[in-house]
Structure formats: C-alpha cells, structure tokens
Image (cartoon, rainbow over all chains, first blue to last red; front, side):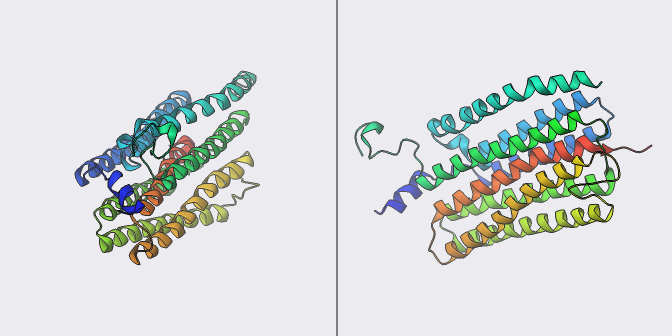
Length: 107
Length: 203
C-alpha cells in the first residue's frame, strides 16, 4: 500500500450530499436575512453587530462543514482556530483604543 | 505505526502535509483580510463624509447574486471533493470545472460592476459623493478578494486537468477545495461590511 492510498483512506469524507445541501440552504437563508436587514433603517451600531454576528455564524458553517474541520482531529482545530482568535485579539487590542478615540472626537 | 507522536512515524493531525500547509496558509491569509477590513472600518470611522452609494437595485441585488454564485460554487466544490474521494474521476472533474465557471462568472459580474462605478466617476483615488478614501478601500478590498478568486479559478483548472489525467489524487482536490471555501468565506464578510453597511435607501 502506497502512502497516497493510506492518506486517501484516512481522510475519508463523513459528510453526505444531503448535509451539504442543508448547509448551503442555511447559508442562503442567512444571506437573505442580511439583505433584509439592509432594508430596515437600523442604527449603524446595531446593524454592524447583527451583520458581524450573522457573518460569523456563516463562516463557522463554512469552516465546519464545507472545509470539513468538524470531522478532522481536534488537534487541527486547536492549531487553526485559537491561533486566529489570539492574533485577532492582539490586533484589536491595539486598534480599539484609537478607534474609540475617533468616535468620541466627532459625534 | 506504533509509538507516540513525539517519536515521529505518526501523523498527529491525521492529515497529509499539503492539507496542514493549506490550513496554515489560510490562517495567515485570513489575518491579511482581517487587517484589511479593520483598516477599512478605521478609515470609515474617522471620515466625516463617508458615502453610502449602493442602491438596492442594481448594486445590492448584484452583490447578493454574487454571494449566491460563490455559495453555490462552494457546494459544487464539496461535491467534487466527495466524488474525488469515491474515485469517480469524471464526475469530480465536471464538478471542479463547474466551480471554476462559478468563479469566472463572479469575476466577470464583479468587473462589470467596477466599470459601472468607473463610469460614475468612482476611482481608487476619487469619487463625487464624498471621502476619496471610499474608492481606495472599496477597490482595495474587493480587488484583493477578486485576485484570490482569479487565482482560485486558475488553481481549480490545473487541479481538474491533473486529476482528470490521474496525475493528482483526491487529496489535491480536497486541498484546492479548502482554498475555494476560504475565498467564499472572505466574501461573507466583505459583502455585509462593504455593501450592506453602505446601502442607500432613497425615499
């Protein structure tokens, strides 16, 4: 058995066609909700919070099912996701104080 | 394959090296896009006359359709990976090429929108509605994303060609799928941030 055959067996896909269709369907629904939100004259802060929240749900769906991370070993998840969260936190720590200052400067 | 992960000879992530490499690349690329979106948010916050030029029709409808195209191409890519793992080579190649067609449609429709904006006088350095940085951030963000889609289309065509001739195996298809889904994922942030936050509801 060659190395390629071994990996092909190890990375066998657990997802079914039906599951992927459902994920796709829900992604479309969430996109529709986002577009509907654009019609409502919401306050920008609330609008931004809702949009970012929905986008995070959508990206979680894509990463978990389309990119298959839910079916991988926990080690891969631990390499990718906490690292991203840590780096983004570091960036935000330095951006937030300054951007809050801007918000106060002009109402 | 006995012994602990520390001795070697075991795959601690149960993936091949290509896949781990792609995940790490996507990690760094997501930081690139995050900082670009943050920079956009920062510039927008500090501007006092940021324009909201996107009307429901055609701009928002067009962008929604682009989202639909990208999501559907992700679905065909998932089908391609599943078919590749089942060793159905012809089916997998057709699905990969369908995905690439979705990518081409995305780029073409997006470029048409760009040229519409050029005709209205929006360039990366100026626009008639207000802050000139609007053009810079808009074309910067969507341009970086469009570059990723274009590279993805080329990547997918190479994978389809190689997989069809059995030079590549199912793992290559899966890794190219990871890249494609990531491009889709980035658009899930650019669409609300750039378009929906700048929607113009007249009347």
